[in-house]
Image 1 (cartoon, rainbow, N blue to C red):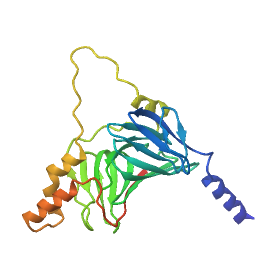
Image 2 (cartoon, rainbow, N blue to C red):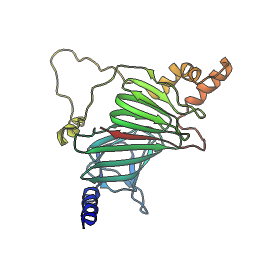
Image 3 (cartoon, one colour):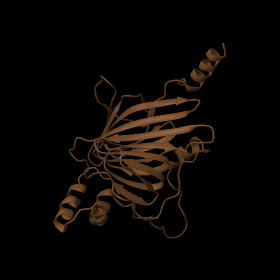
Length: 268
């Protein structure tokens, strides 16, 4: 009888709480989505869509998607698929596949009573994140704040901290993290509510005096070009010609390789 009761408790804790969906919070330019088996439709702010949906952005087009308290910014010329959205009494699980392009994410951290698991997979690499903001193009990772574990198909991984860049795009190696900017302040907190997510999409109020332009975040491709030789040298390239060739390869958004890469975010 005790065993049956224990099993009932476990099932109650892990059972899904309703059917969760993602929602478009911001749409600019040509953005389309396709629910499994249906035709492509134009995305609109407020439209909800389920697991299995693909989202595609066109030239100079972007989208912002809210998923279980986290936000994903889909860059131009990007296609992603929502693989999993699950919420139960233990926490939330979100899984995306990045087929092409680049995404930026603000992930809600885990609280004392629930765990957030967030993953982004690509044909090249995997990143595991703990309460973080990051930018990922399938092989190159730039962490805004928090802690991300970047790994490749050989289960070789490195921890990448806020303000650091790393790449999993060459052979069986993952480059050593390189500091490229100051770490940002976390946007979404474990104890915060919907108002934190809403604040991301609110325009900043006007301020007195001359406006101070924010410092631009480095683009992944420029980071690779700037630090590419150092990254490759850390991986043991013996000659200058090999370093140059490797840097050129690293600037590609996604390598055509038989490998698997992803970003898995376990937010605590």
